Each structure stands twice: as C-alpha cells, then as structure tokens.
Length: 260
Image 1 (cartoon, rainbow, N blue to C red):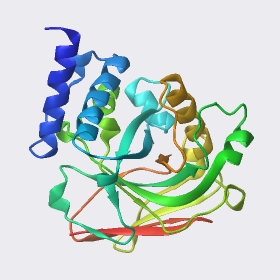
Image 2 (image 1 turned 45 degrees about the vertical axis):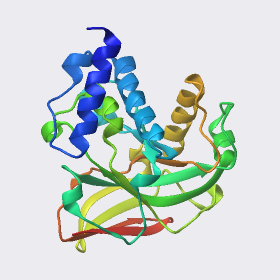
Image 3 (image 1 turned 135 degrees about the vertical axis):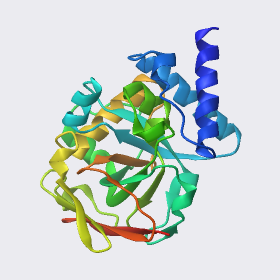
Image 4 (image 1 turned 30 degrees about the vertical axis):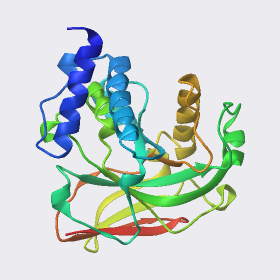
C-alpha cells in the first residue's frame, strides 16, 4: 500500500469516528514521528469537509505548554483548522452526547486586520497587526480512544479540535496584558482550572507569531478576520453533562457555555 493510500485510509477512519466510536491510535500507521504525514492526513480531511460545503474560519494552536511538548517528545506547537460548524455562541447550551470525550480549556482568541502574507520581523510588529482579542473557550475532543495520543495522533485528528466559544468582547492589543493576565475556569461556580497568559508559550502573541510563520511557509497565509485560538492558559478539564462552564480572564472579561 502506498503512503498516500495509508494516509487516506487513516483519514477515513478518523472521519467515521466523529459519528461513531473512538479509534485506536493512528501513529503506528503514519509513523511515530512523521509530522508531515500527520498533517497530510489532517489536510485530506480538511479538503473533504470544504468540498462538502464547510467553511474554514480560522486556526487553533495546540501544544503550547512546554510540559506537554516534553511529554510528546516535540519542541514546537501544532495547529488545526477551525470550521464555522465548530463555532458555538457565547452562553449557548451544548448537548454533551454529541461529542465523544470532550475536555475544555480557557484561551485567548485573536484576529488580524489584514492577510498575514509577510512574517512580522518582531513581536511588536505582530501586535500592531492584531485587530482584536477576546476570552475564549475551546472544547477539545479526540477521535482516539481514551486520549491515548502522541504528537502524530493529535495532528492527524485536526489537533484534537472540537468546538470553540468566543466572548463578546473585542479588545485592542494595547488594552490588555497577554502575559500577566490570570485565568480562572469555573464549573458550576467552582474553580477547576487556573493559569496565566505566560503558560501559553510564554505569551499568546508568541504562539500567534509561530502560526503566522508556519502558515506562510506552507503557502497558506492567515486571512484577515480569521479566528486564531492561541492555546491553553491552564490545564484542560474533562467536560461533564449538566454543567455550566465560565471562563474569566483578568483584563479580558468572561465567556461561558453549558453542557446538557
């Protein structure tokens, strides 16, 4: 079987898992450290979804924690694709049974004012290109059984993407502290996760800069207005039914979602 045939087979199995049951890890088939192959699988499923009429609305950045990178044996983040069908309105209720094994984390989302066709030469230049920032919740989900993932598994599985919630706030870059801000995630009023902006690759802007450069290198530059989920500010937690989750980020505001 050719490499492409292997990748196509893995991509089909991941697609089926969305509406079925989680599958065994796919890393052994793709290659334990074959990141290029994993992104090829991701791209195959992105193409499948866009051909079916789904709209790409942004990107998410994963593996922004140095601790998690070390656990998976990598020295860089990864990325996945955000589709309009993944967007959930702030304050909405989600049927927990529609997801496989969801977890939730607090993040900062942002968008750029113009297409990012040229890499910024400094962090300050990147900040100047940002249109807005907002608190955001990412509901990650894995099509891999029991979250038994390595780096190849999560990349192939669209960086373990599920759903995302963007707060109503649209803050300007100079209005907020992306490094020193504190984050609290509440479940039915009790804190279940805490962190800071510095937990996201040292600064969410640094995560965004990595993504900008990565997408330019792939000749897929980020577009103006696309949502960029910059990465977790603290530990992700398991999602439970009949639970209200609220995110508060100091200086950014709040957003929330409920699972039925």
